[in-house]
Length: 64
Image (cartoon, rainbow, N blue to C red; front, top):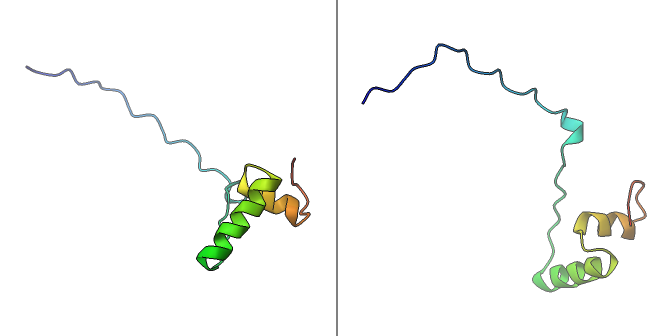
């Protein structure tokens, strides 16, 4: 079976997003027990860890 070929140019790729609008990682090293305690404390503040951390640290832009 012969497939049909299209003589159309492919669509150009989408523009790359601004790097400032992309999320950036924040990594810290803690023990397993500290991690469990930190995550439990963050869960009490908000279900989203990033939001909970911003709220706990009173960082501008935190939403409730």
